[in-house]
Each structure stands twice: as structure tokens, then as C-alpha cells.
Amino acid sequence: MIFALIGNFGTWEIILILFVALLVFGPGKLPEVAKTIGKTMGDIRRYTSGIQKEFQEAINLEDDTDAGKKPAVKTKVTDAVDAEDAANETEEAVVEAVEDQEAAVVEASEDREAATGAVAETIEPVAENEESSTAEEEKNDADTGAS
Image (tube, rainbow, N blue to C red; front, side, top):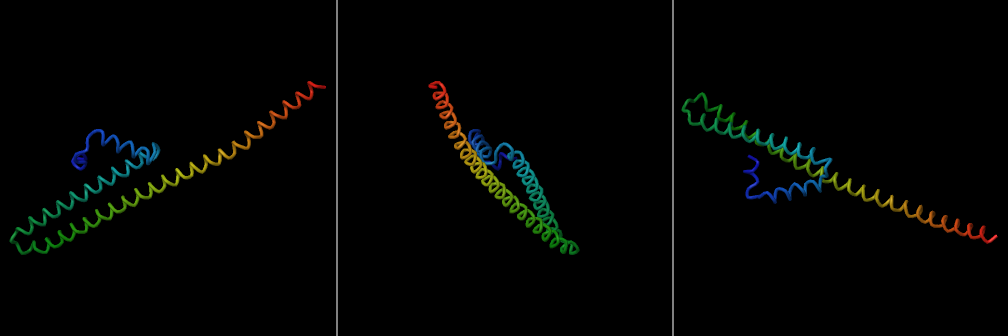
């Protein structure tokens, strides 16, 4: 079913998409993102099948000439519209969740870059101190040897 939604993507395109997702979300977040997307896809599928069922029932009820079933048609259509609205809200929530996760990934990468820079700044003075200590020791050794 999922491949029907993908269209004309081949194996290499799918591998490229998975690789980019791995780079963007990282190996730690990728299972969580996949679980969220899978759960959302299942919810959307359930809502759309429910909507289709409701419309089909509404059409079947509309074909009936029994006057007692006419108000039920309006109720069924209203229920179907409500279900469609719920599906749209769920889709919007998923988009918002993905955007939040992307923002968290960007923030984490910025924090990692800042930490890397701080470590580099810490290492440079230590290296300079080691070089000056070594030079002083050599000078002291030379002075001791000359005595």
C-alpha cells in the first residue's frame, strides 16, 4: 500500500531518501521519527477508510425511498465531515511534530558545534603550556649540565 503512494520512485531513490533521513535525524532519533510517522499514517488510513465508509452508507441511505431514513443521511454526512476534519487536524499535528523534531535536530547540532569549539579552545592553552614547560625543562637541563 505504501508503494502506491510513492509513485515512480526506484530502489536508489528510496535508499537516498532513507540516507538523508538518517543524516537529518541521526541514528538515535530515526526510530522515534519512523514510529511517529507510521502511527500517523495508520491514523490517517483509519480516518480515510471511515470517511469512505460513511459516504458509502450515506449514498446507500440516500438511494432508499424510505422517508424515515432521510434524517439519518444528514447525520451520516455530518459525521463523515467531522471525521474528515479530525483527519485534517491529525495531519496538521504530524506536520507540526515533524517541524519541532527538525528544529530540535538543528539545535542539537548547533550545541554540538559549540561544544566542539569550546573543547578546541581549552586544548590550545594546554598545548601552549606543555610547549613552554618542555622548553623550560630543556633550559634547566642545559644549565645543570653546564654547571
